[in-house]
Each structure stands twice: as structure tokens, then as C-alpha cells.
Length: 361
Image 1 (cartoon, rainbow, N blue to C red):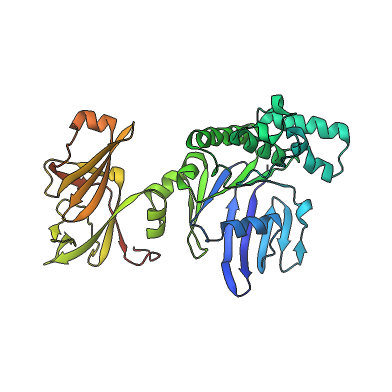
Image 2 (image 1 turned 30 degrees about the vertical axis):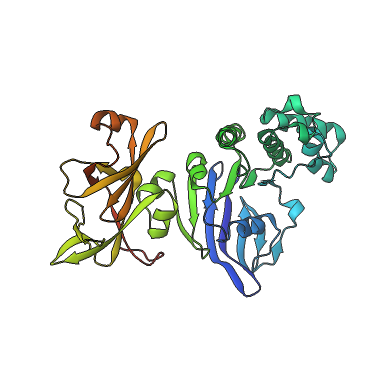
């Protein structure tokens, strides 16, 4: 197992800077999920790690092995970096059998034939695909093809595996299965995995830690999923990771109000010592709860049953508010009917300036 480190890495295409002085360490043996919106630089960072894109400055290393160092003019060729890669579109060759696909990287390295077969079968065993060794990709499901792609990444003995949106093309059930497969493979092998995605839900289910990139290429927060959900460092992280309600705030005669069609007193909202005028209140969907005694009233517009929870859409003085209620809460509180006007309460509210990237202290 090896760690991966990016130190003050800057990458640009022409005059366009993708990210500048980027720093990140992926600990050995962990699954690090790098998340961010499309165009933020996730794929460029992967290309820099693989050696497909040359950074302008900085240093990239796996363990003690330096792959790139601008100052020392080190730039290890792609084929000598020994990094496994799994792509979004599987990239398995349709004219080759499963075992031929998995064996290909070893043939390119001119490994002996007997060793190639043994290592390829061992890699297929790790992803539970040995019985399909002589099948063509056209005879496999999407999930099985992705397992072949993972086996091909593992066969070279790479201590670091990069997965770039590997489950995007799979249906919901297969995505769940592949996330479990990836976790199992990582646990058995102890490999270090850098998982690239814009799907924060998959990242939350899979990662040991998560790194969040903003649209401008800035790395704004690194931490466990719990840390990022409960203690976001800025508005972007709060809005990007998980769904939220956004309610504009104002102040009248020193008291906080919701700035809606009709200003509504924000009674019972924990403001603390924050001056909320001109700020937005952001609150998670499951941090909005029904409370018949609350002075904050909203009307139920619709209710959707999602199997394990109810998703409510409410109207609060012209503002749509979403609320998620677990089955346990629904049993204890009762089902709220469409058209009913009822009190709601905001738990754990956050207050941010309207500027997306500005952090409020």
C-alpha cells in the first residue's frame, strides 16, 4: 500500500488555469473520493497523476516514488507509473475474451506467458469472474464488464487504482452492487483507491474520506462524510453535498425574519449572535421537522412515499420547502395530509452570504 500526494500542483491548458497550487494527500489503503461539479478539474488531476498531462509546477508522488517534480525535472513515463485505471465506459476490447482483456497490460510489459495466465486468473478471481474467462464482452452485462475493467487494473500489481466515474453507466441496482464490490476488493487487497465522481451520493456510500473541489478548481474541504455533512466549511460544500433548502433572511427592529412574499418572523430559529440580514438560511431536508406548536407555518402541497421515508413539498409564504420524514417519525407523529397547514421547525440551520464561495464566520 502507498499514499498518493499532490504538492502545489498547477495545471493549465494554454492560458486557462485549471487549478493552482493544488495540495492533497490520499492515505495508504484508503478510498478517497474526489467530488466536484463538471469542469472543476477532477479529470485533469487524474491525467496529471497518470502522466497523460504535464503540470506547470509542483510535485506528485506515490509513497517514496516521485512521479513528477517540476523543479527537479522529473516526469516518469506513463507506462512506468504502475497505476491501475478504471474508466467510465469500461474500455474493454470487444474482439478479445475476458482473460485476453485482463492479460493485455502484462503482455505490453513482456511478462512471461505462464505468469501472465496465473496473474490474470488471480485478478479475475478477485472480482469473481473466473467462470467468464473465455467469454466475449458482448456476452456480459454492464456490471460484469466493469468487473473485467477492474481486474485489468489490478493485474499489474498496482498499489494505487484510479477509478474515474466507474459506475455512471450502470442502472441503480448495479451501481449499488458495484459500490459493494469496490469496497470488498479494496478490503481484500488493501489497495489505495482514488475515486473520481460528481455523484456525491455514491461518494458518501463508498469513501473513507472525501475531497470536495469547487468549480474554480479550489480544494475547499477534505474529511470524512460525517465531517463534511455536519460541518461544511462554506456554502458551496453545504449545497453540493446533499440536498438543502435555501431561505433568504432579513432583520426588522432587531428581530430576524424570513424574507418572503410576506416577511415571516423566524421564531424559534437558533440565530446565535449572527447578523442574518442579507444572508440565506440553509437547512438539510431531514433537518426540517413537523412541530404543531411552532409559529412557523407552511401548507403541504404534495407528499411522495419513497419506501423508507416520505418526501414532503411545502409552501411557506410563497417559498417551496422540502421536508423528509422517516417511517419511524411518521409512525410517531402521524401522516400529514396534502392541503394541511402545519407548524415546522428548522434544526441545525446554517447561515451564509449570498455569494456562493464566501465563507461566513
